[in-house]
Structures are given as structure tokens and as C-alpha cells.
Amino acid sequence: MPCSVHARALTFRYSDGRLALDAVDLHVGHGERVAVLGPNGAGKTTLMLHLNGLLRGQGGLEVAGLDVGPGTLRSLRARVGLVFQDPDDQLFMPTVAEDVAFGPLNLGLAPEAVRGRVSGALRAVGMEEVVERAPHTLSLGQRRRVAIATVLAMHPELLVLDEPSANLDPRARRELAGVLGELPGTMLLVTHDLPLAAQLCERAVVLDAGRVVADGPCRALLADDALLARHGLELPAGFDLALVPRHGAPQEVAA
Amino acid sequence: MSAGAHALAGVAGDPASRVHALDPRAKVVGLLGVTVVAVSAPLAAWPVWVLCALALVAVAAVARVPARVVWRRARIVLPLVLLVALLLPFTRSGGASHAVGPLHVSEEGLATLAAVAAKATIGTVSAVLLNATTPFPAVLRALEALRVPRLLVLIAAFTYRYLFVVAAEAGRLRAGLASRAYDPRHALHGGAVGRAVSVLFLRTHARAERVHQAMLARGFAGTMPRAEPLHAGAADVAFLAALGLLPAARVLFEVV
Image 1 (tube, chains in turn green, blue):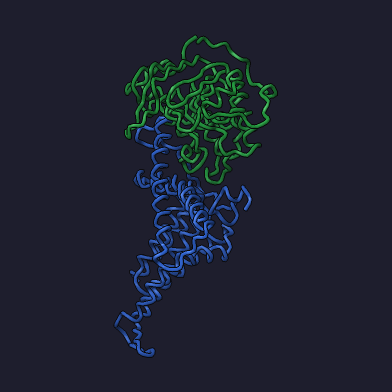
Image 2: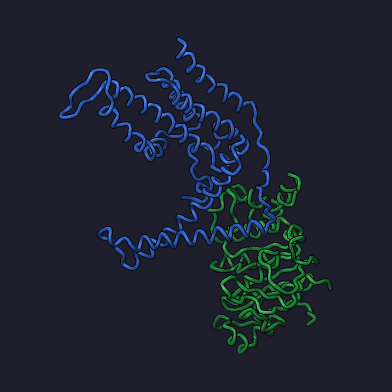
């Protein structure tokens, strides 16, 4: 199976000396859905920023078939879609339509193709009706979905989402889970929302203090209370993993 | 406010009117033209100003922008302009002079005040009508199509987009201060406000970095991609031709 993410001893230190990634080894196969879990400050977002070359650490990193480096940034950013945690960071154009068109236009697509991409991406997240709205007039849940559309419009091979369910009310969260469950392709879900991870991902990786401390089937991992407790994670009180609806069939992952 | 109304923030009147439907470039050029004609007219060019005012009234009538809305928006800007002009009759000399208590009012100063008031009102109402008939993103596209330097358009676009975000953040900071019983009684109590402002600045700076990262992540390579071209039609030509009578009137006024 071709690898979508192939990190070998990836290490990154911020300029203030803080070690954010400490020899991370991570291999994500094509078509896999992997939850990246961990407490605050574990290095989850730092790892995500590496995946399309916004940060560059030491060690080997291959993403979507490309060695991450100065020469591959352009094609890399076309293949890897990052959805940032705060949609106000992601949506910077005056209207939703212009924002969703931003990525495809940067890819050099023709206007008709861009129009098709914009409507297709907004349809995929159920947000066609807000196409001419200004982002600040949308609710947080709507902005999250539009932010996902801005990335989907680029037809990425790998979709990376940073805390997509943060601060959403239960209905917006449920709708978002439905949207994400329908998306094809490889997905990395960086989150604290363990029920969402259980619902969407077959596999989970736990990151703590910049190291991968656990990697395995999502449900097995979430059922390990001791492991979760050691790394500052816990399921909501009274939560029953067995009752979580499952999107997609579980896949066997080679260690 | 309903979600639909909020979507067209700033737009007033009948969104389906002929003026609202015009190409934004025609409205930017036309209404800016009215302002330029009014402002550039010499002192006491009352016929020109009356024509400009009539043109604006016609635009407002076709667009069904109520006078009340125009007044409400104009009164935010006008007092600032007129405050300065109000001093003119007292500071200018020339013409006959009348004593008002200890002060002297010059006739020439009064004439200047009237001219400045007319110019300021026409300019402000033009801007209000542009804002009321054209969503701001369309104004930005028009400016870009009219070859205003892209950097300026970009700055305006980011300002428009993030003004609301920063204002919301400032509101939360203020609520944070107020909810902990912050109630400044004199200037020395203002320190907390200063710190809140610096927090706001730092947060905005951090956000700018994140926005830049998000732009890079979607393939931004230093230049903004071109949006789709705008299309002008017969109505736009007619609109500009009608407003084109104003500069003609202004030139005639000086010749005659």
C-alpha cells in the first residue's frame, strides 16, 4: 500500500528552544483515516504544519508521494489540504465564493473549472446557499464547514483537520461529523474529541510531549483507560464506545 | 437581524432595484464622479451643487434607499467635517463683517462655510449611496477591475474581513474587564485598558501569522489570484451617461 505520510525520526524545535516533535515515526497508508490524539502542547498542530511544509524539522518526511522540501512545496500544497482550527484564520477573503476559489485559482485552473470546484466543494459540505455571503456573517459551524470546502476545492489527496469539532454546539458537531464521514480519501484528524475520533477513524495515534506514545486501532486504544489517563485524555463520563456509529469499514494497518 | 439581512451588511433599499443591479464599476465611477464634480466646483457654484443633489436624490429614489437611512449614515461622518468648517466664519476675513457678541463674522467666511457644507454633504451622501447599493466585496472587485493598485485593494479586503473579528475580540476583552468590576473613575485607572489594547494587538499579530500560514497552505505564492471579470451592460452605460451630464454642467458653469 503506498504511504500517504511517511515520517522518520521527525524532530522539530521552536526558536525558543522548546522541543515540539521528538523523533516522530508515523506511517499513514493511502485511504486510511487516522486520529491524532494527545493533550494540549503535545505537538499535534506542529506535526500538522509539517505535512505541507509550513514548518520544517529534521529527519525524513514524505507526504503524498513527495519528499517535503523547498523544491516540492508547490505540488505538496496542492496535494495536502490543511483545515485550521480557527476558521477565521482560514477564511480571509471578502466572500465565501472568493475564499473557496482561492486555492483552485492558485493551482492555475481555468475560471470554468474553478466555478465547478467551488460549487462541488460547497455541495460536499452542504453550504451551497452561503456562496455569496461574507464569512463574518456565518455561524461558527457554518464557517468550519466552509473552511473544509476551501480545502476540498483543491482536491487534496490527504486531508488534515485540526480540532474540527472545537466549540461547536451538539447539532453543528453532529452535522460536521456527518460531512466528514462522507469524505473520501486519506484523513488525519487532530483532535481532543475522542468520541468523534471513535466515530470517524479506524486508527489512532497518541502524541505526548512530541513523541508517538501509542498507535493502534482507535477503539482498542480508546478502551484503554490507563493509557488515556497517562496522556491526559479521557472519554466523556458515561460514554459507551460500543454505541458509537461507525463510518467506513475498519482497515488492517501494518505496524 | 435575520441571517439574510446580515448577509448583505450595509446594503439598504430594494436589493432588486436597477441601481443595485448595476455593475459595481459603474457605481464607483459614477458616484465618485459626483463627488469630484461637487468638490472641484468653485465657490458659489450653486447650480452645479443643486444638479449633483438632484442626481443623488434620483439614485436614492430608484434604489429605494429611504431618506432616513441616508441621514442616519451620513450623520456619522458629516459632523466631523462640518465641525472644522464651522470655525471658518470667525477666522476668515473679507467682505462685510458683523459683530456677534465679542466675535466677528465675515461674509466671505459664511460663504465658504456654505460651500464646504454643500460639498461635504454631496460627497458623504454619494459614499452612503454607494455603500447602500453595493455590497463591499463588489466594491473591492470594482476597484480591482478599475486598476486601483492591488496592494491597496488587498489591504481594504483584509481590513473589511478582519475588522469584525478584531471588533468581536475587543468586545470580549471589554466584557472581561467589566465582568471583574473594572470601572475606571479617572485617567490613572486606565492602565487596564492599555494592557487590554496590547493584548488585542498581540492576538491580532498572532492571527496575522496564522492567516498567512493558511494562505501558504492553499498555494499562495505572493500574488492574489484573479477573480472572474465583471460584465458591464447597457444599463451601466446609461447610468454613467446620465451622471456624465454633471461634469458637463460644471464646465459650463465656469465658461458662462
